Image (cartoon, rainbow, N blue to C red; front, top):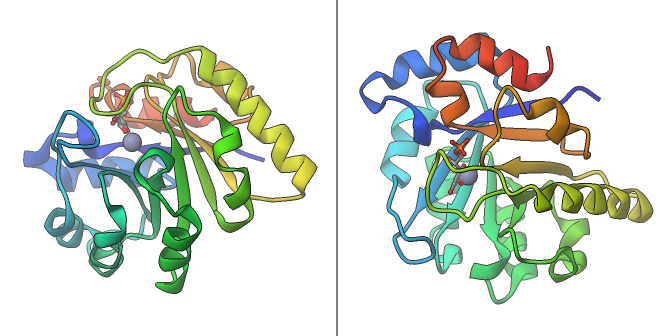
Length: 216
Ligand code: DX5
Ligand code: ZN
């Protein structure tokens, strides 16, 4: 199966978001990765519901919303109403994962769960049949432009093997430090969706960078 790209607009020029969306369409973006940070779960603040609402109505590219926030259950309906297509919560931020995933599914949105680099896959095996996507962080979340932690690659292979064993079909995504140079190697571990922020929006040719990350 062809791999997918989810450009992270955290790295985009916010004065020229319209141009960022034009480039993402041209580069074949499969999702727009939307990083929400609350300054509590992660040591940084980004953007949230009104920004998502303002831009989601102007594009057909599905929004892959990565909630790096505590108590995500309080905001899931608002993100769904604002135009999220896929809503992902961190395992580390949620006490009752099945309940939160159920809440997302009830709003007719796709579900996802995210693991920080040090959180083992065994913490989510009980919900793997309830998710459309699992995101493995390849950096400690909070900032764009960090270097990929290589130990996370094996985790991708482990999750892919588990998915096969369980006969499931969720997508496996990786986020943090993906570049046009390392994308082929990263994808070879079994990742279906590659998030890339700075490697796309800081490239001299973002469309070419997206195509290279997609393996085209
Ligand atoms: C990190 C975010 C990432 C980040 C990726 O907390 O979740 O999505 O924007 O940025 P790059 O691709 O620059 O590492
Ligand atoms: Zn992210």
